Image (cartoon, rainbow, N blue to C red; front, side):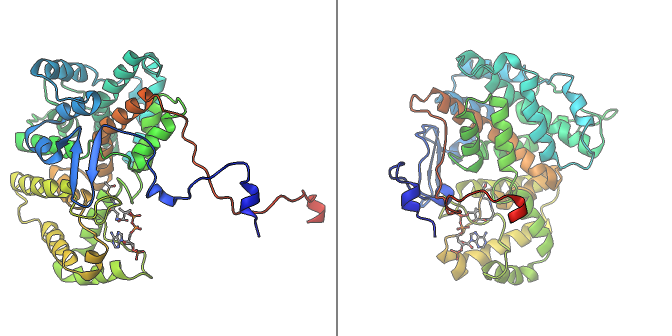
Length: 402
Ligand code: ACO
């Protein structure tokens, strides 16, 4: 029996909080969530208003600087982001080193982490100017890298950024244009893509953002910190849920099979969970899920898929779950990932790209939180404690005597 009291006699009191369910790791002025009421505010502005009236780069500016830009500030910011979209040509060599069947998120973790090998002039975190250049570079280059990961995955040549297009249109073009064919961005789809980016831009101290802050607390350079965030986001309990949710809907396939899956989700002996349902903070409808549902309708209409059978499965699944005692009692509602898969599929993306799109959009949140942390006078290296439950002190036994 381990005498924990004796082991910790010199450390004073500390809390034991697995999963950090009730421990604030920082002060932040960026994003506010009221999980009971289903409220999400960025710098005080409701997500519904930002998604309806704003555009993604405007939200990026807001998250980074704390205020919405004036017209002149917006023009300047858009210009600066737009003119950082190219990646060093040597980076394209990275891609040919990966297997073609590599998951694009694996490619993202490696390639984004490698940015610090190319942009040495923006890795000094003590210099505010370098920090801002790194921030703009990351927001600007992420769509280019994500599109390159996609093109490599499907065996097509890379498409370079076209800087007279807006952020979302440029990204869609880099993903879907092919040489020898005219490609015109559908403005309805570009607006939908932009709104999806807004919905994923930030979500306070979630697992990947906390990972970025923890990595950054050691003084690591911003590119390395964002790569750490991407790695964390990949998990199916976090950003990987959009891919998992669509796979689940495809597996269910038809409305008549829903009760079987609802029963499995409630069965404690079955590890199955309804993907795209439940949230650590929201104990009410995730406000992003409502906007995502509306975006899904618009995209399906614009692409001629209004009769998508998976949409019927999703709508019916939501209806049944929301009327089920188990889900009501545990306050499990659709989260942002529930409808995003159907929407992204209709936009033309394979499931393996879903989490990549999430990472692309969340980059601004990560970078805004990272900047806030660096500027915080309270900032110290993050160093959680533990409750040691292993063996007490004992003497080494030579291998011949074991
Ligand atoms: N389906 C069935 N039961 C669920 C679900 C679900 N999707 N989510 C939670 N529960 C149940 C759990 O079994 C648990 O039941 P218990 O109290 O009887 O043990 C209870 O609800 C609480 O669940 P926890 O896992 O303790 O809640 P936590 O806050 O740790 O997890 C999480 C939240 C990871 C999002 C969880 O709801 C889940 O796994 N959902 C599915 C994956 C998903 O959609 N992730 C995306 C999150 S949003 C995002 O990252 C953008």
